[in-house]
Image (tube, rainbow, N blue to C red; front, side, top):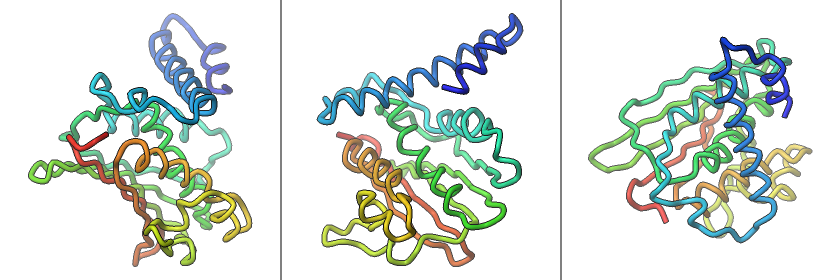
Length: 215
């Protein structure tokens, strides 16, 4: 809401169209969050539907430029490196659901990097032979505590469990956003989502998108 108020205050004839685009996007995302809170058992057609033709690369670019890089207090705490494959196909998923998946995973890298400065790399790739896309959110932080990478009886990593479990590992509700991302990506979209620590340091979330196999 702060971004919306600031854009409205700063509107001029010269930046009107750009400002309108941002304000509409912010407003639609807020509306989607309210809808999710109001309707727990949602009609799947409001999430996955052939009428949606969402551009994941464009969504990543918007979130980075107009959400994270607009945070006034960020200073030099984090930086972004985007490596986006232009061959990425559109997906039949509501764009604000994709936002709900990506934003908390990026925020996790910022909040729990445990470094003075963290670089977050967002990379997309499309494999035309397998007809599968991947989105990788990788950081140079301290990594994920080993206990949160353990899998439960269903094969789900603990970082994706509800906050009452994931949050206790680090003394805060660090796993709540990851839980939401998992529920949306896996439970609603039929995608894959996994997490791992990297040998060179930091962690990586990988979203796997099988085209033509969404629910």
